[in-house]
Amino acid sequence: DAGITQSPRHKVTETGTPVTLRCHQTENHRYMYWYRQDPGHGLRLIHYSYGVKDTDKGEVSDGYSVSRSKTEDFLLTLESATSSQTSVYFCAIRETSGNTIYFGEGSWLTVV
Amino acid sequence: KQEVTQIPAALSVPEGENLVLNCSFTDSAIYNLQWFRQDPGKGLTSLLLIQSSQREQTSGRLNASLDKSSGRSTLYIAASQPGDSATYLCAGPQAAGNKLTFGGGTRVLVKP
Image (cartoon, rainbow over all chains, first blue to last red; front, side, top):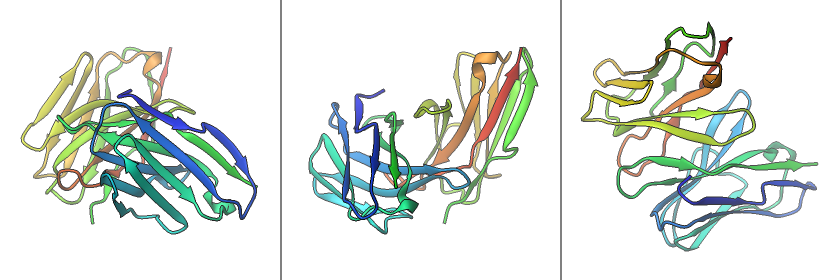
C-alpha cells in the first residue's frame, strides 16, 4: 500500500462548512494526487503536487484547494462544501523509482 | 488531451475461462500505462505497469501488453477465478510525473 493513510475515512458534513481531508505517506515520494470518483464520471483529478509547496490543478479543481507544507502530507480542503462534492476521494502517490502509482483506501464524504 | 476508453464496460465469464480486457488511448505519446483493480467500496490496487519502451509485463496469471502505435493495451488474466471479480481500470500519463488519465473501467464477474 506504499504507506498511504487517508483521514477521515468517512465524514458527513453540512452544506457550506469547510472540510479538510488528509493524505499521509511514509516513504517521501515527491508526487501526490487527489482524485474523486463518481458513478458515470470515473476517476477525475482534482489537484496534484510535485513537491513541498508545489501544486497544480487537475480537471475538476473548482471549489477545492490543496496544501503541501511537508513531503509526507497533502491536504485537500473543500472551502464551502456543496452537495455536488459528495463523493469518494482518493489520494495517490507516484513511486519515485519505477513510476508506479499507489492509491489510498479512500475517504467517503457526504454533504447534506 | 489524452482520452482513455475501456470497452466493454462489463463482462461476465465462467470460471476457468481466460479474460481479455481492452484499453484504448488517443495520444501515443504515453509515458507508461498502468492497470489497476478495484473491489467494491475499496481503493485501487496496482496490478501492472508497462513503460513506453516495453511491450508487455507479466505477473503470475496476469499479462499486459502495450502497442503505442495502435493506441491499445490489453490485460490478459489466465484461468479466471471467482476472486478475479472486480472492476479493472487502465490509466496512463503523457509524460513523466504528469497526471494520470483513467479509463472508465471494465466490471468483471467470474461465475463459479
